[in-house]
Image (cartoon, rainbow, N blue to C red; front, side, top):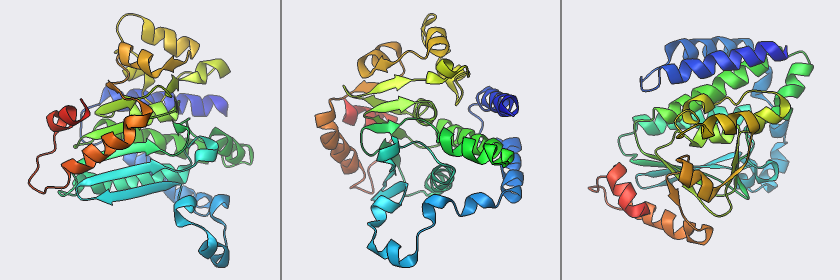
Length: 278
């Protein structure tokens, strides 16, 4: 079963980045829809089995695994599982894929910011949850999870509008897939990057074959084979990051980005965002 999921992920990883730059990945979308029809158990995951009375007492911001913020023409997607280092569940991936599709087609949206709560941007996919489903006999859930995750990575890589990823903390595995192909990748002194799959005998997926191969020399191969960790400064030097900002200055940076959306007449493009970050 491990080999089935491994080969499925490899095929999709090659597919997405072979066609990088095209607006649609029709065959993948069809497969995802077919698998979604087959799988019904994921619709009510255990994490959401909360009674109405209990839910009223919860802070909904704590309850939502992804928080979407709307400020003028700026949109934020904030990963909100800080206790699990914002590891991605199927529900989180589905929410982000749906909302990013809405943001991309909405003419009033000019910029999307991705970030995480707590001490991580995203430490990868919720592998433990996937393994639990697979070992309980729901093998197709694993295939659906990785197909949907890679579809989200492709959506971000080919997004029609600027995407800024703020990487203040751990960025690993699936978290790298979310962020490494965004327009701007901002790191801090707290950033720790790795594709640690090699340490458990698995190849680095989520588009790593694309962004590692574009690192000068053989350093990308080294990272893929060893799973070595990088700091934010090291990411900047090898090209995985576009900017370095001290973590204490992130609030000021976000305020500056928000100010771009204050005027409806303001043109927010890559050049404007670059001036603001610099």
